Image 1: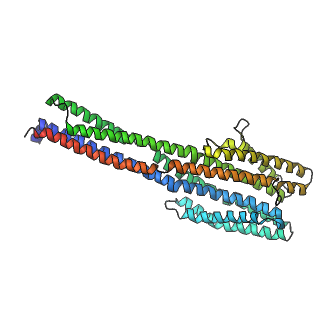
Image 2: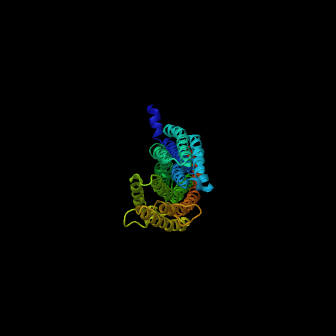
Image 3: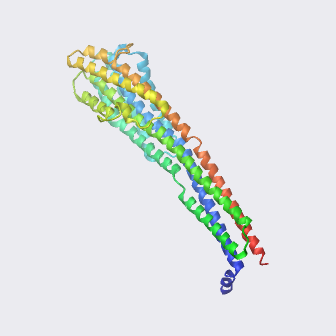
Length: 427
């Protein structure tokens, strides 16, 4: 043992020890940089291909159920005069929800809590549809009990089905945020190791220069260049990925979330508007619900304009749709106010005609539908902005992982060669 310690302190021994440390540090840097880049690439791929689409599907499931509730009430009020397109819209909403439930359940990696809620939604949806169909059948017979059935169906949806759908949406939104944070993480460990390795290589080349009076060591110089390139690539790739992910969040994820919130609140207000007519003023609960929800949409007095004020930094391609939606939203409020004035005067038929009437485009229903159409188009634009910004981020990080591993291996090889040249002088 003493002989080994003595050998380690000889010039060749010190060279071997220094070489071993530098090679180990180069390999550790390469493994860490490659692992962190590959991990971020996997998270970015998960974000673009699974968590964001699944989160959007969960939001669409909630929206479809809320729209089915509002449309069922509108069709009930029209009774025999219900246009085919209204009935089709209700059926399409249920078909969308029925498609999204098993689709979400089939996604790999879905949590047990989400699976349980999806199973409950699969059981609850047919019950709600059955209640609506019973209400429709009774209403066609001219019996007032139909209105009670419809209100019960809506109450069941609002208090049982939609909370499950909201919990599912929250779960998937949390998974999306987790993937985003993992993809956008800065690889500090790799960067610190790279800087330490570069500093160690530079320091040892100075030591060799002082001992041997040789200005350059080609092997160690190549190793330093490889580490420098790897560091620059890692910093540049991290910055590029961060920029793309930031744009994906500010132009896609965040505006889509706020837009989904606006659309759902508006649908709930629209349901309350229609159910208030179904109840024929028997309760003030629906009118109170309308006022509460529309105040939420309008926001505080100093907000940047009603429903659009709830959206932050929408992409430029969605601004026109959101501006048009704002105008339609204001029309909806004005027409609802006109209908409420007629209702306060006891003119139920006039209230009904002002709120919704088949074939007319000057009703509150028509204004709401126009608003919803503009919001839907804005949502598509924001989804396209996300796809454009997030697409390719995973590929860039995957290439960065491979490059870091190769450059670190080159640095290790250069170190072995550079130290080997000096050891050869002692033979």
